[in-house]
Amino acid sequence: MATTSPTTDVKAAAVSPLEAKAITATATSTVAGSGIALSNGVVIPAIGLGCYLMTPVQCRLAVATALGLGYRHIDTAAVYRNEESVGLGVSDSKLDRRHVFITSKLNPKDHLGDEASCYAAALASLKRLGTEYFDLYLVHWPARSGIKTKPKTTEPPKSKYKPNPNRKTVSTPPATKAQAKIADSKFTPVATTAATAPEPSIASIHRDARRVAWAVCERLYREGKARAIGVSNYEICHLEEMLGPKSATAGFGSGSGSGGRRESGGYAQIPPHVNQIEVHPLLYGIQRPIIEYCQSRQIMIEAYPPLAMASTELLAHPTITGLAKQHGVTPAQVALRWALAHKHCVVLPKSVRPERMRENFQACIDATSSSPDSKSSPAAAATAAVKSWTLSSSDVAAIDAIATDPKISRRRMCWNPTNVPIK
Ligand SMILES: NC(=O)c1ccc[n+]([C@@H]2O[C@H](COP(=O)([O-])OP(=O)(O)OC[C@H]3O[C@@H](n4cnc5c(N)ncnc54)[C@H](OP(=O)(O)O)[C@@H]3O)[C@@H](O)[C@H]2O)c1
Image (tube, rainbow, N blue to C red; front, side):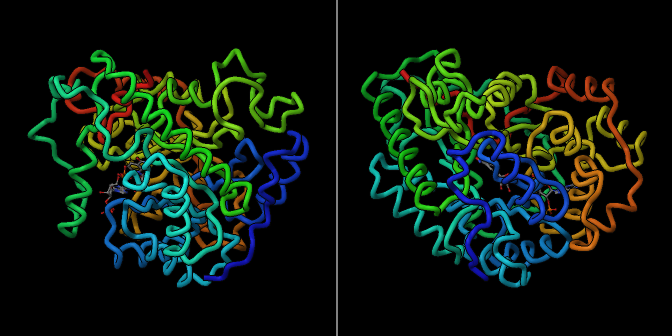
């Protein structure tokens, strides 16, 4: 992989909103299609290729294929065990490193409450990726590894939503035993419900671990090893702990002269630029408060898994299929357009199939970019030919209402961070 340094300076965190705009303008020219400025001015391409549950072989090919189609953003994580393949796929694409936005995340198993482990884990990720810097580095999970967050005597938490034994998906099953293991672990809650308050000492262990992990992210940022930093699966309570209550700050990048730095309260010296959380229409009712909270604090939401892992409860929902038919697009495109254009979230659909990658990409580029750079990307040129379509406000309201459809048996596809308490 070509390892040219990033064009957008990490010192962007300390610039005024005006300067940030100038940085944005420069950075936009380095990404094909549309991008969205983070609070520090770094531009993130609106759609990223999700790499969860890709085998290393699939991943290398998928990354190179996606980049050939016009994607400029790849979302991986140490726990996906395919960072090396991401690096190789970027190399195969022959794109300059500066033109690909790469995200990785702190492996929950390395979230051990000490700076040395977290920092070493980040450096190991960089090595596997074959790059000198992350475009975005995230704390994957808001709890320390290996420490239960429930008292020993507590009953196992009961899921609010019972799994539907008849649930069908059109997804590809995990290709290896190792992947199946990761997939299983995704559904294993590691914490208790908020109702069963854990011992304070246990909560404080997790709180201290979150603080240490964030200090490491800030170090990576200051050292130029991450152009942007953020969190994943953080609830409002975790963000308030990090930033201080909303009323205690003037707001990041609000022109207060803080250049995006914290004013008071909380442990963060640098605010998170991103919170990657579960967002799709099946879960919208539950996630709406955190989406709105993050947006009010200029924290970009990245929506995973935007296709609800290809659940038929989403992709075959009559509202989604009806709108797809009405607009002459696919159900996946409706779901992606809803999240990106109407909920203002970066989307991270995963696919190993070129035709689906193209379909997903077109839904997003068309949604945000009025003038894609057709010279720099074949997909952007193809997109320019796609008939423009828009979800009306009543379409959006109908999709929002899916969250209250009593027929949905399963809304949360992934782990449940509401189970990680702060006190
Ligand atoms: N931070 C976190 O804790 C966290 C958790 C989960 C996920 N993520 C990130 O978010 C990404 C997306 O989540 P995800 O991979 O779990 O699920 P997803 O993107 O919602 O869905 C992926 C599934 O949809 C299928 N698919 C893709 N495009 C399609 C289309 N146009 N029509 C029909 N089916 C389609 C894929 O199959 P094919 O591959 O066969 O096309 C795959 O089975 C992950 O890959 C990962 O990067 C983050």
